Structure formats: C-alpha cells, structure tokens
Length: 311
Image (tube, rainbow, N blue to C red):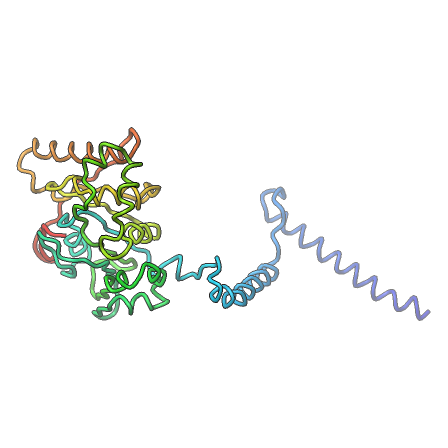
C-alpha cells in the first residue's frame, strides 16, 4: 500500500504536466496561422534566454576589453541619435545648409575654407560647446571609437549642442571642406577607380590623420550622406573624387549627390555646362555605366539660415 500510494501522486503530477504542455501547444497553434507555424515559446522562456545572454555578455566584456577582443560595445557601433553626414568641396554650402535646416546661425559660412574640424551639431536644452577629448570621451555619445585615429583627429572634432532648433531627434555632422590634393584629378580620371585608390593611398595623412578612414567611419554609421558639389568646382577636386571612391563606396542606398548653389546660374547654358562637367567627372571614378541621380538645389540667403554661399 505504501508503494502504491507513493506512485499515485507522481503519476498524477506527470499527467498534469503533459496536459499543461499539450494545452499550451494547442493554444499556440490556434492563435497562429491556421496551426501551420511552430508554437512560440512562452514569454518566461524568452526572458530567461535574454537574461542569460546579457549575463554572459557582461561577464565576457572585461576580458574582451583587456585582450582587445572582437566584441564591440554598443557605443562603438551606434550613436546616441541618428545623424546626417555632410561631405563635399570647401565652400560648397554645407555649413549654410546646416544653418538653414536647423533655423539658426550655428556654423560659420564663407567663400574660403572656414573650418578644419568634424563638427557634430545636436539638439539639447542649452547651448553648449565641447572640444574633441570631451565628446569622444563621453560613452553616451557613441563616438569613442574615433580615438583609434589618433590625437590629431581628437583635437579636430567638436560638439555643438543647440536649443530651439527647427528640427529635433537627429544630429548633423559637418566635415572639413575638401581641397585639391597632391593627386591631380587628371591622373585619377585617366587611370580609373583602381588607380584612384592606389594613388590616394600615400596621401591619407595629409591632414595629420587618416581622413579617408574617418569619413568612412562616419559614413558607415550615418543614416543619410549628402555629398555636396558647387558650380565653381563641379567634381574637379581630387580629394573629393578620392573620397567618393575609397570612403563612400558601397553606400549608394543612403548617399545623395547634391549640386548646390543652382541660383548662381544666370543662363540655362551655364547650368547645362556645370551639370555635364560633374557627370563627366563622376563617370571617370564611379566605374559603372549608370550614374547616380544628382539633385540640384539652392539655399535661401539671409536669416534664419545665417547667410549663404559658404560651406
């Protein structure tokens, strides 16, 4: 009798467990697409798996940091806010565009090169300026990985927090205006994109840091990339063409080529000549028959955009 009574509760518990599992599977199939999809695991199991993975990741990170392992921190692969990245020739209108979009005079615009820094403009409760070491050392911003490009880049990076901007929820990153490099445009065009990469390889440190690598870093994390050209230099700057080939390759899905300052054209013939020159120059380095779409625009001058014509 003792043995019989001891087995009855065990069997009863087994039957109840089987019934519970069967009911869960049946309910999952009824909720799914006609019972064809496999049943989803209970929420408790999902939470347990997530908690276990998080615990393992947390325990591995100290060892990964000490050994410079392959795991990336979240701040190394994403930024605190999505951002628009602006690149292009000097005086092509990048800074003026930022001032116009944000509705405030934030960046200095001018005909000559006015800025040699990567400037991050982000919305905030108060107006604050931070230098490179401060912004790159802030783990919440997500720019810490730029430290690998050396102190020259760190000291040529800055953050501008501005309140009362016309848009919120995203950042805008302005880059130094690109200028003619020792690599002549004629040498790039005559030999194609392969020669562009080889010729520019020895000139990546002209600014004291790997400019092409930094542009690639920002571009890979940006949500939108705007490449600016202007009528005075429609694609004739060697550094711009080199950046297009070596730093922006493979990012066509978020790259927009802009021919700015369309209001400077007095005749349609002048516009056609500049547009055709830009298409011709781009065709020599893109390396495919189909050219990307080129957007033409102009920015209204005066307040609140903070003046026009520079960049």
